[in-house]
Image (cartoon, rainbow, N blue to C red; front, side):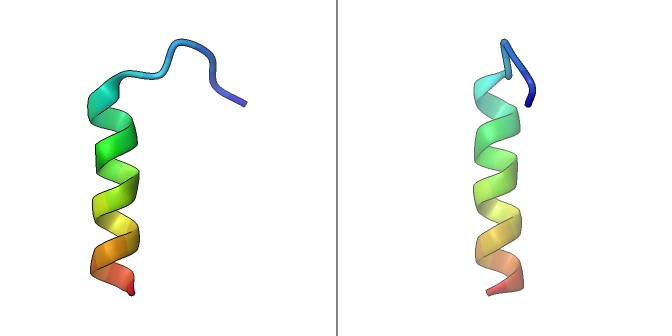
Length: 21
């Protein structure tokens, strides 16, 4: 688990999931 993750990192993962959806 990563602590202090940046907002961009979160959006990045969301975008990746959307792209791979």
